[in-house]
Image (cartoon, rainbow, N blue to C red; front, side):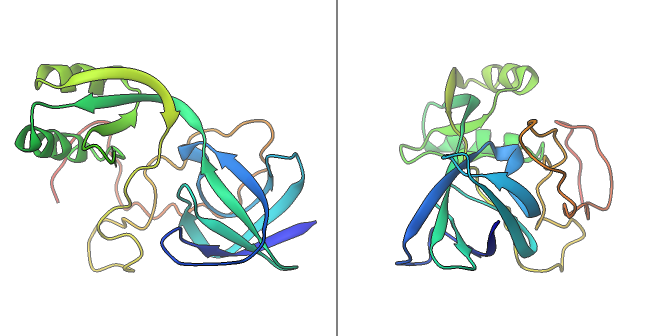
Length: 190
């Protein structure tokens, strides 16, 4: 079986031969070691040194050469439009205060996974919400990859424990280092 052993972020240049793509939902893109199937249906083992949140366009280096490119799957999302940059910044703060993954689109709109409670909050704060089916590729947390120094381990993904489709084998190495529990969508202070 092919084995992918290195994560190459989309921001890092790489000219390796593309040997396939793998399309994954957001909840399935925080991984260390798991058997996956590329978009052509061929199996490969993701075998990284530590759990990584895979972004759209990232590459996975194969032991035998070449890379597999990661693609963000289309998902049920909410795309949020605000009245201007200040309203958008305030909206992003409210969403972030609920520890909800957030994508900032190139045109300045915001995107989150579809959630009726957050939809109602956004509308209540004056945002316009469009339910869409689109790729979801949220920002990494500010502490992502910094290895600590903050009481909350932001190198992990708060939503990585969601169930996976039947085509995915058991992931034996999720990063479960979040030091305290809180209900999804509930704000809390540090």
